[in-house]
Length: 146
Ligand SMILES: [Zn+2]
Image 1 (cartoon, rainbow, N blue to C red):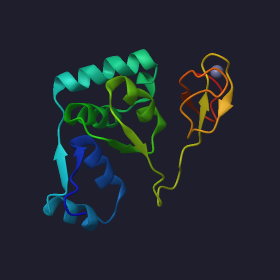
Image 2: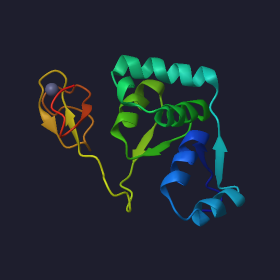
Image 3: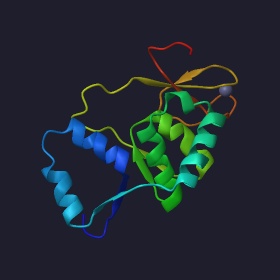
């Protein structure tokens, strides 16, 4: 981990602390300076909220989701997430997203990618429709339409 600094927002950090019983790995990262807890600027949060409203993801994003997007936007950092709602908003903020599957998270949400133009379904790893080239949107597999 040397030389690799990670950033997370206060809200996300609180969320992690809440879920995890043992904080030792997290604390080691913080003490070594490899994990920095930051609060995004109010103006960054407002930018993210606007982008999320345009993409239609806003109603499904938590305050923690918005804060981590705002931080990535502000710091011009790559964002690591397994949340496709976050991944959906990121491109309009020029935030590069890397999606990962985290072991130990019990309920991984089932996501599916849908082409907004021809309504074809794709696995969520894809970003563009193979048929028409439109950017795919991501939805819960279990929820047909909101
Ligand atoms: Zn299409």
